[in-house]
Image (cartoon, one colour):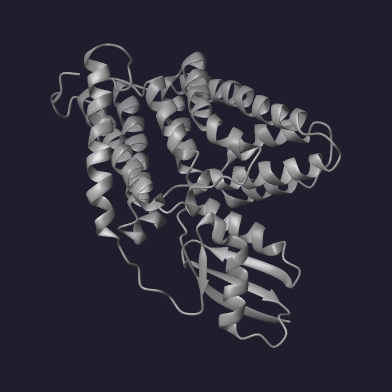
Length: 339
């Protein structure tokens, strides 16, 4: 048995490291895996016979390529595909203009001057559902589906998973909101929490642009051991396992989820926190539901780069707008917008 260290391309967050470890540890020749987001590498221990490091890297890449990752012996130079902005820029601006038009016509409240609306939470959930954060959840759903399908159960586990996820996001989101009321945040405290949410969204949006790799190290996450415990749940074959996995996704180390959790804390309200997290979970529902029955993944699509850059620009818009709102609430700057 030997230990090899490979550079990883395509990592964005702690969930990426978890997903890589989970996928590679399931291979027959692998005995130990340790992925590092900070170093952008993975250490793999195993017996690969007489294969060269390059051959091993290619072999291991096959197990994780569908999620957008590749391994190499040496560190590859980061290449920014600027031409994708020629398409993503106008598309993103079109989306932003459409949202503002809906706001002006008072058809739907996606952005407000004082808070993150449920429409915003839903939209952020939609983006999160196709990010690497939710790739971990997708992997859990697919593994769970395969295990129960062998026993002839196809629909019940899926229903339990999604019900557990939605109910837990409502209850736990409400609990976070109620917890915030105990702190009795002042106007300044609420503004500071809003600034934190805005900064998290800005970091997430910049990461989606894939222009500045070093920004990924700034992304806050929950401790990885919480996610690893969630990964172990799929090995438990019990009637309520799908329900428990759905509940556990609330603690996924995902920046999108945490940005909404931080906002829920700042509301100081059980119902506002509950509905905010539920709106976010509903935004992730369509893609996760499709993942329940297929191997759908945005990372394998030819235009995935354009999609992520488009999403990144829109997320940065929401981040900047929430930063503006928080500074207005704190009395630091006057309002610059009329919507």
